[in-house]
Amino acid sequence: MPVEDAAPDSREGFGISSRFRALIEERIVRLEKDAESDEAQLAHLRHGDHIRRHMLLIAVQRAEARRMRSFIENSGTRIPPPLITL
Image 1 (cartoon, rainbow, N blue to C red):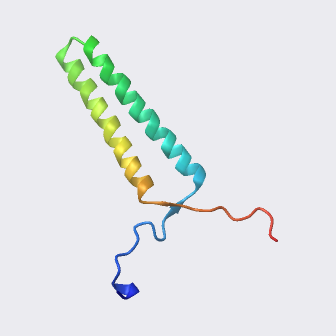
Image 2: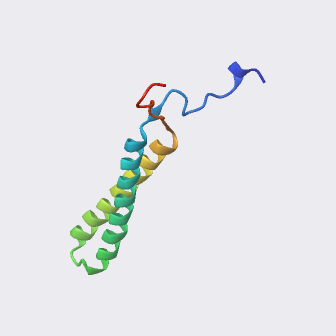
């Protein structure tokens, strides 16, 4: 199969720094942890509207974590240039 007919790599031409990648990964972990914690708090809520808003918060946290995870999976990590030229 000729190279020009192959499907392009989704990571091609798009890279993020390892520091930025680490920050996003930390944020994903926090979002997922917060969603789990908020979900555990649902049992203590009594007012229907409060429960509905709390469930919406949980859904948004999980959706944001999925969106960020997708971003990470579709990007490469740039290798920083050497600090001293040899």
